[in-house]
Amino acid sequence: MSDHQTKLAPIAKENNSRLSKKIKMQVSTTDKMISAVVYVLFSLFAFMCVYPFYSIIINTISANDLSAKGEIAFWPRGIHFQNYVDVFKIPGLWNAFVISMGRTVIGTLLTVGASAFLGFMFAQEDMWGKKFWYRFTIITMFFNAGIIPWYLTMRSLHLTNNFLAYVLPSIVAPFFIILVKTFVESTPKELQQAASIDGAGIITIFYKIILPISKPILATVAIFSAVNQWNSFQDTLLLVTDSKLYSLQFILYNYINQASSLSTMVNLQNAGSTAMSSLSTKQTTTSIRMTVTIIVVAPILLIYPIFQRFFVKGIIIGAVKG
Amino acid sequence: MRSPSMRSNSIRKFLYISPFMVLLAVFAYYPLYGWVYAFFDYMPPIPLSQAPFVGLKWFRSLVENQVKVDQLLQVIKNTFGISGLSILFSWLPMIFAIFLTEIKAVRFRKIIQTVTTLPNFISWVLVYSLAFSMFSSEGVVNGFLRQIGLIDSPILFLQNSEHVWITMWIWITWKSLGWSAILYIAAIMGIDESLYEAAHVDGATRMQVIRHVVLPSMIPTYFVLLMLQIASFLNNGLEQYFVFQNAFNKDTIQVLDLYVYNLAMGGGSYSVSVAISMLKSIISVALLFSVNGLSKLLRGEGIV
Image (tube, rainbow over all chains, first blue to last red; front, side, top):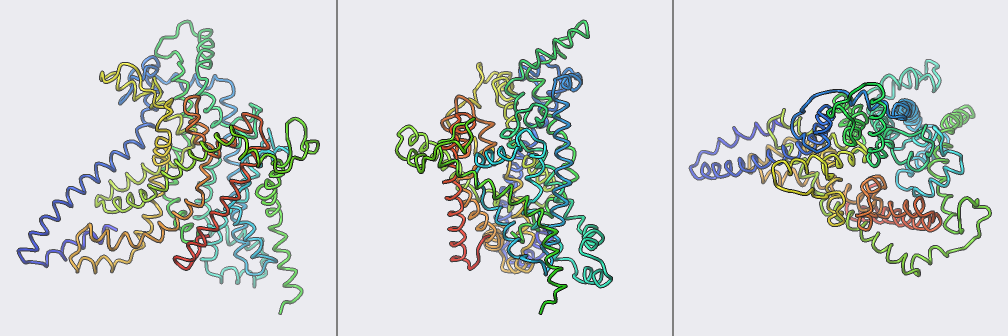
């Protein structure tokens, strides 16, 4: 992309008349002004995207009495890491962490496996009713019954307060199937034909040939799917009342609204174990809320730099098709 | 000509995918059966089988019961307000992409792109938590304004009942602008190099290149996305509005999805809620068909 911009200069220089030089001068000053405005606007927006994360991180490691008053704005003061120890004393937080991790790992494995297999199968030419079943799958992207009918039917299937409700509904994901199907169709047909002549069955071909060559697209699917699972909130809200099955997102939401009672409780626990707890490490509603926020967002922030390069590829393949 | 072995082969292939089709039937199609609740007077814990059949009573109540009508009108107004703002500014990601790709400093451009895409990957609960940390009365923004002496009492950003549509739209934009721009960036990368060269030979300025080369090549992408956005006009989603709602902004934040949720899970009026849900789904599908037809009419191919 930067290539065509550098090409501009020599071509423009070929015009040597005085008039065109004058025009070029004017153009380049407006260009410069536009550039400056663009740089400032982009920097401002980027700052708005990063600052909330940064601000909360420095608040969680600052003195709690200062963070409670909103006095930590640009750099941490009174650095300590007690909050990250204390926060796991809240009953249920560790359990919610395990639930969220569990649904992310299990859900992602199931979704990736199913998307790979279905994407591959829908790329097969000879399957009974292939066209119908493909449409049957893809059409579900464009309608839904609505959350309450969904809730009522899930309840009638006994999927309330049931871990399966976290992983089963997302196994067949039409968008991911399209991604894999498009990818498989772009690979040379000879690979599959050769294996078929050698007597390999459809499952062997899938396992031995398609899975290994589809790694890049499956990585994209895995990342999207994992992020979806980790971020999922609505299914807990609708289907789960048993606190043992609460996800991290759900308890974070609860904490935002009721952090005061939790901070009192942690402080009481601490008062029992250590003789004195200073103001700066005493838990406040703010410190509890912010520390839990960081724990919930940390996995996303940690894997983001790695998965960043995958999703651009993924969305472009999807766009070409969709 | 199909031999019997080929036929059995093709049926076997179907059998392999059949368990997945069952899953799809259960989780995507069976919920449609939930629509029957709209025709009964369903009051939990009495099961549906014992609930009296009431026909179109709930649908009629939506136009006859004055309280319901007023509520629903406000909800529809909110839905139109927020979705309308999104559609009004649907060109923002395109402009974002154009100016981002114009930036010559590669390092700077990469950083901007990486950083502005990040918010798309956090949940609405996290967005709300960030919003709370920034804008609550003890939040960072109020703390900062107090410290520099601009205000004495905190500004109640989150409890505000005014400007809710705009703040909701701002959060949507904050979360999705960088991400939505990626599609357009891809479109710009796909522009034929010779078009640029021709423009430069003709002595086009940077703005002229944008206007006559870059913009036209993005219009198809923009059109498709705009049509899809119009098709999902009624589907604002629940999560964002659920987490941001409070006693103060309830009137102006309730979009259809949140209203349906509050009616059923808050008020226990499952049947009315399902009736509205059902109408909403049907209108959405009709909208999708309409924009698809429009697209076929205008550019000769559908969008789905």
